[in-house]
Length: 268
Image (cartoon, rainbow, N blue to C red; front, side, top):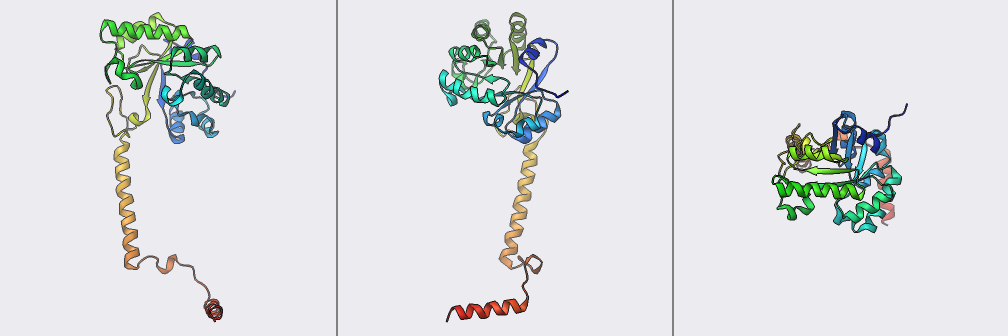
């Protein structure tokens, strides 16, 4: 039997029964590695869905194309963005746009995932890059946002940097599939960025991001090897050691002589 990605119905049925692993992947190599590693859910650049290699390397991944609302536009633009992706095989859509947009997409049976808590593109409204939901009022605000998204037709929300106890309480009172980014096991999927997991993020590493490898050190070592190899090449060129005879193509002496004679005739 051919394996397939989980459906929305599968995800909702498994709430509280199975913790899904989810990563943001940016390249085909990362997508293949994540699939081989058993990661079930991917956030991906929209263009990746249109690349036929994606389903070759990740045939069973539940794939959310996603981008910030200001990169896409209004409700009409979201619909024009989502429909070709749905046709190409997207399993769901990340939407940080308006409730009107979520509602319109859901009315067309597009599986929509909203975003609550710390929303980086909207962080000015919650005081910057910090946890949301640590006070009663802000926890109520997260709850209200979840309810509004659910009422608009979203089947899931990414709940980001919210106290785990608040996430647990919300999970018990809604039917949403909660994708936790730093919001605890009350979420039904645990979501990180590949850059953080692989240790290839040179900027700020969020508190919730667990680093499992040190790709930055590997990249630094590779860069040193690049520089050393290129310096050796440049030195060889400058000192006449490259190209040595082993790297040259030889012509027969009579061919060279005939060609030179011919060139001389061309200049008369």
